[in-house]
Length: 122
Image (cartoon, rainbow, N blue to C red; front, side, top):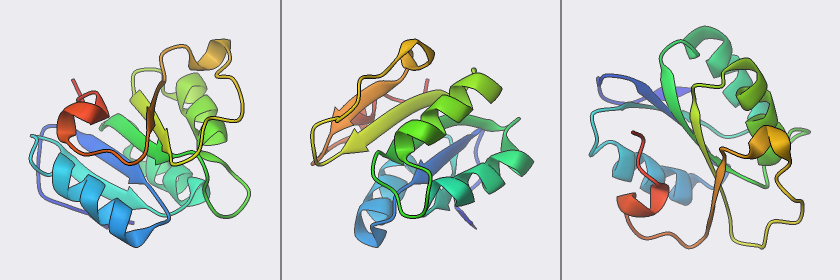
């Protein structure tokens, strides 16, 4: 778990590709949010266990290492921490439909280019 600059809330970036994670972090560090990084769904849940009250934005890849996918992570977040705005991203088409628990989750295909593509944290 790595943490960036100070801000008004936390954006949690969950991406296993180091270069893409660094790009997402760089984009979000331009906002008022502090940025925390995770490379797997399990690591993200560990972060949320301690930081959930401050996390306002989750940006997660659909395909993550280990056992938890980004979709599984988004479901867990929506059920436990429904105030966290969530965006899922992938370089491949979304293979599963976003069910009722994920109606507020946005999907953004890769490659993404600018902060406005992230749907903004607000």
